[in-house]
Length: 185
Ligand SMILES: [Ca+2]
Image 1: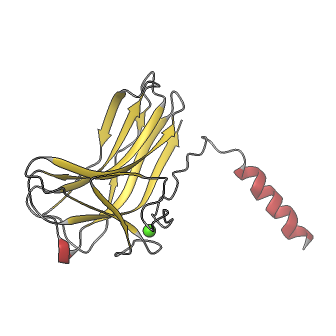
Image 2: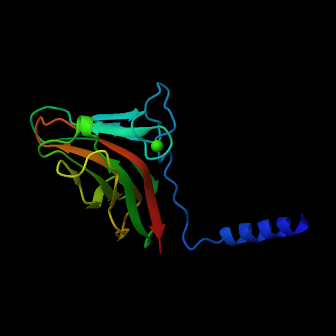
Image 3: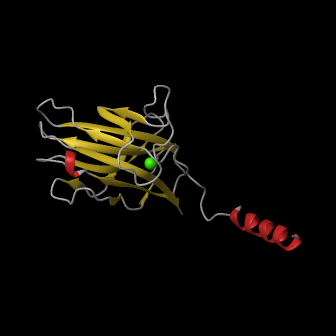
């Protein structure tokens, strides 16, 4: 019993000196419900963005995005902001799929964005992951990553956005789950 106790202490002390400060996205798997059972307040939705019990990669819920059907280029999505530490590198990742019974069509795509803002809220720099497009297999999760990017000078906040781009009126929805933001020296 004593040995187990001391081992636990050792593990805890090692874990207490990480190589980089931790950045924690809130509700990364969309399992937390908002007041109406929708998205939790951690996520800021725009367009058609809904928390749904639909083919999760983990847990029970996912984020479902689809177009606004206004006949021109439009976007739906959800984002979350975190404070930036100058000089560190950041990477946004998520898993995305489209289901065969509601597959992406035409020029519809889904991807992850990493954006840096200054303290006045101006966008300084942005990076995109590769995109899920209509020609990719349906009913299968794909991993999307923006890659690691250094916070530019003057950056105060970093934004992770899950986004659906609809160039016209083509149907189909993208399902996101298990979002991650990594911060490294
Ligand atoms: Ca989930």
